[in-house]
Length: 75
Image (cartoon, rainbow, N blue to C red; front, side, top):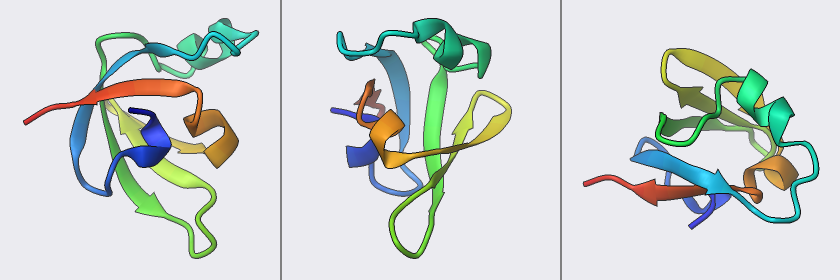
C-alpha cells in the first residue's frame, strides 16, 4: 500500500520507497524513515497536498510524492 491509499486518520508504519525514487535522501531528511509511524491528518479540497504526521513532524506532501512512499497499516 502507498501513502496516498492510506485512509485519513489511520495509522501506518513506513516500510520503504518505490524503486522509481531517485532521491531517497530528500524523504529521509524530512523524517520519513523506514519504521516511522505515519498518519494522514488532512487532505486538501482538491486532493493535493496531504498533511501527514511522521513521528512528531507535520509535513505537506504532494500526491505524486505520496505514491512513492510504501506503508503498512497498523491495527
